[in-house]
Amino acid sequence: MIYILILFTSIATYGQVNLILKPDKTDYEGREIVNLTIVLELNGDDLVQQSRLQLPDLSKFNMVGSASYRDGILDPETNTNISKSITRIALEPKQKGKIKIGSVLVTVNNKIYKTEPFDIFIKDIEKKSPLKSTALNDVYLNMEIENREVYQDQPTIAILRGYSRNIDNLRRVKNIKLPKEENIDVHSINFNKSEIDPTGISNMPTQILAVFMVFPNESGYVEVPSVSASVSSYANSSKIVSNKVKLNVKKLPEDAPEGFKNAVGKFKVDIYKSTDEKVEAKKPVNVTVKVSGEGNLANMHLPAIEKSADYEIFKPKIVNNIIPGNTGFKGDISANYIIIPHKAGVLNIKTEAFAFFNPESTDYVDLGSKSLSLNALTAEQLDANKTTVEKMNDYTNDFLETVNSPVLKTTEFKVKEKRKFNWNTLLINTGIFFSLLVLFLIFRKWQKNKQLVVESADGKSLGSVAETEAEIRERLKTDISDYFSYLQSLKTEQNFDAFFTTIAEMDQEVRSEYFNNDGGSFITFLENYKGRAVAVEYENLQQRIQMEKYSPVRSEQSLDDLYNDIVNLYSKISK
Image (cartoon, rainbow, N blue to C red; front, side, top):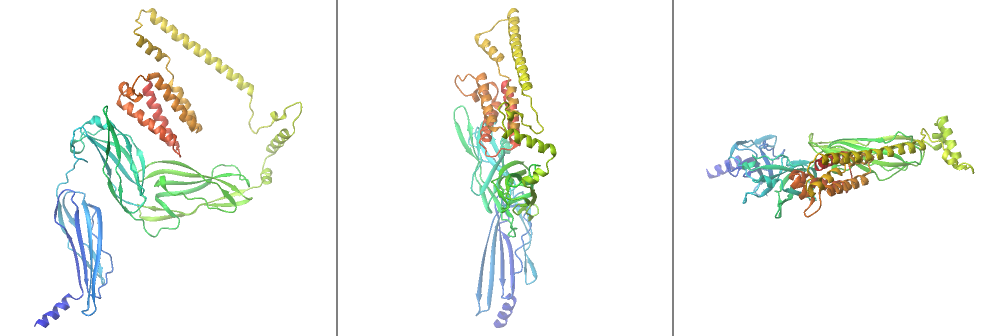
């Protein structure tokens, strides 16, 4: 009987598949980590695992981490072949209450095995303040990233919040420094403070201090470092830091096309000639390669123009025209090339192959290479295409430049194409303009003196010396709108050096008119007489001016925003 029982036991256990899914416990506190263990045991040498472990729906959790271990026993003497794999998954619950965890599936020898579903219970998730308060007047920072599971080079938006039981302390937070790390690229969106929410977490007032975008450039678990800031008071200044956030950066699929570098998002590529002029051999021509769309435009590799023996390429000038969007930066980036054809004829200018990864469809899109055909002409061919009037103008100019009469300075009689300028008219109009300007200034001065005499004759009190000085300073105040008009003109002409020099002169002029520099700083002066909001806005604007002044790349949108902010702020100060 013993031998018979042993025989039946070996038959029953031979070819057995054991699949188990179990948690470490069934009740969890708040955001306590849920650990799930999956055990797959194959007992038999003829069992073949045909699929990977298929996990249940875990959308109600944040994936914190996972690990697996595989082991086996092979004994030919006893005909024993046992393989075992153990997988451990760490999950963070997103909601409270009872959560059902479904079955794990696996296919072995064309048969599907699954585990039994079960329920776990998550107790109430208490929303706590970012840091425990030890003093009512302290300020705390909290960095929030909602989308913590992204692909490599896919941007995610981070929000920096400040918390304090004293609302006035939130207004004193400044000098916000974004994190820097080799495995991430951080780009600021704005540092505009939101309205203070008095009913924040645990009834602690909160305010959004900054919004920025994080681009992880490697896969795996990437930690975003803390954001630092300073809180200034009349007595001292203290430094505060935020929490750190871990991102689960998914690796991009392996089947990437040859043209893929690091572009993640949705893009298109265009190549075109920047001007309408005809192309002449051995003369420079402007060609632009533009990438437009939305994604990681700020730090992506642009497709370059391929080298060729038919033309010479010079290093391009990069022009950014991007703004923050919902899934990254949107707009376009242009690379302006200068190309010199070596010979006449048809030139086929091609770009490098370009491909990008679309996170929404989770696949690659290969756009290939773009080409531009140009017909380079010789000087003789260009002359043949000119009209009779254009040829006569060229002959006349050549004659006047080469043959100089001893009586007449013939270079002054050069025929200029489609342009004739009368210098006498310019001088007369300039004289009339300055004469009217002088008369207008004399009239304004006479009018002000007349008003001063009328006010004195009415018997009004002249006031103290300080009041009289303030009144005279008010009359001699510089018209700040003149600076605004001049700045608008410089911005349109793209004369950036003169633009920022004029801003410094205007700032110095405003300081000299409103601030005597008799102790203290101009920011303190603004805070006392214009309010804390104007002082903070002035300090932030000065930082932006310096950043834009020394920025290697300037966009038209950023200069327009800077100009509008300058007009608004200095208009407030000069009132």
